[in-house]
Length: 369
Image (cartoon, rainbow, N blue to C red; front, side):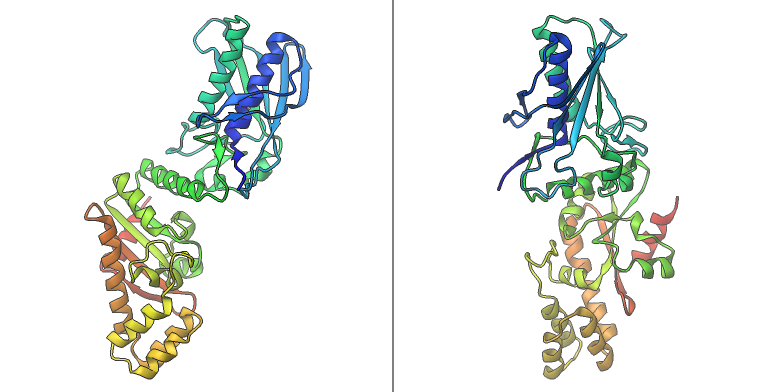
């Protein structure tokens, strides 16, 4: 599959081209930079505009085969001479239109700064400084990165949730976008966990998604949107929480995902493993169900259908007690004694199905502040 290039690579390339044009007075229609991965990137330069002592140009985002919302978007760099010539920073980086601004702590950049991450900043400084040295320019240059479509695009990203307002982020650690990679999602989970830790949260509340949001609001007054969305990566998220020093973790989720955890499945994507009906049927047998009930559960198409059979046979209480015991066992096995992991499991139809011993206590603690 075809690789792409990050917004950081695009910004660095545009900045280098604009610096060349500003200092040489000549147009530049192609440029080459070296990404942090060591791979060369040679994009076309578009939208060249020179006005007085300012040069602006753009690089079009190449996403390869990755389904990226920024595919084909123009990333602009505007270069101008800085009034801080010869003093301190040689390359001053600013965020312009469509580049988000950090509003909450715990992110790559401090509150108030443009959401241009550390590695892209280093890339921009490296490439622009290279041009400055080429032309023996010893003063300072101001680099403004902008993305005219950024504000609208940001609504399709995690930025509003993370506390980045007004646009997209300029990101990337290798400069390369791996197609269909889960890395971006895992990175986002880590950022959210780190951010909540920086805000003083003592309990990491995680959930596969907003399924069951109405139930959590009505019963507990808790908005699932406040939880870290771990998607299918329950095990990885516990690992991250432990690495950040959380001692308490609370997993809240729908039975459709969490029943898998009772079998030790820590990535709940269907391609990694299902066994939902097998696990529900096994719990039923442990609770005294007969062979006919076992077979009926095995033929169910949904967990809600299996719950109906539990209730019909009057085995729902012992079944869910056993299931929650197994979920608690596997979650804490994953945490390896470095954190205590509690769980609340619910159904869209039947509400709360089961919880581990200290789950509600952790939820109340998480809701403070």
